[in-house]
Image (tube, rainbow, N blue to C red; front, side, top):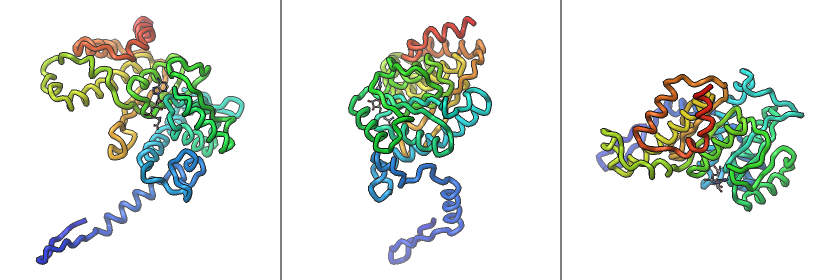
Length: 306
Ligand SMILES: C[S@@+](CC[C@H](N)C(=O)[O-])C[C@H]1O[C@@H](n2cnc3c(N)ncnc32)[C@H](O)[C@@H]1O
């Protein structure tokens, strides 16, 4: 697009048709996974009665879509490589959404994966009883209560007895750590976690190892650095305890500033000594101990010994 100002100070806008064509092709190539008129999107309040995404829910819709865009191939690949067993009707894939809130992602994962022919049993966990009541009523209305369930529980004390895949979208602050720890301790083979705000390390960082004081003397940058440090340590802990882990951007920053995803697949590979050493050096230099290190202390120690 180019803008030219005329002598009369009018703006003349010219659109380059080839660029428009490219954009349209891009949109077409990235077809939606979730049909906005799907009844579940209306029930959860993302779409209106005419089947259009509500303006106020566009960002959440996009977050959920992009989350699914990563979840689906991660599951397929984990099944193909034998890291998770191929699900059957009798033994569906157990997916647990931790800190599910209004369950946009929980329902979306259920509906999308079922539509792709994957047998799943999905459980949404949230500490709030009113979330459970609302979500369970929607499941009933949609006639899917046999394959989707909601529980009002603290993540860390959830009594769910079996999990293949743990997902969490913006579980507040250290609830993300509870989700990772719970998933690892209960044998989840795949974790997809998009963290929310972090306060744990930010409050622990009193003095930075120099020359990092250059960044931490500015509140805004200290906050961002603490966020990165938190997620880097989360990823490293998962690696140490036997998960192949990567950190990716799951959705554009215009849809949420919380757009990092930690993706981990349990391979059981023992960490290299350097992975353990750099992790401990990082804690020592910054004089911090993240909550996840406390929660998974035994697992971290055991992986080192074996
Ligand atoms: C920011 S909301 C995100 C909800 C949903 N995942 C989404 O993306 O729309 C975080 C949710 O986590 C829940 N939560 C926070 N701490 C929790 C905990 N320790 N155990 C269970 N749920 C928790 C809150 O009640 C809230 O519904």
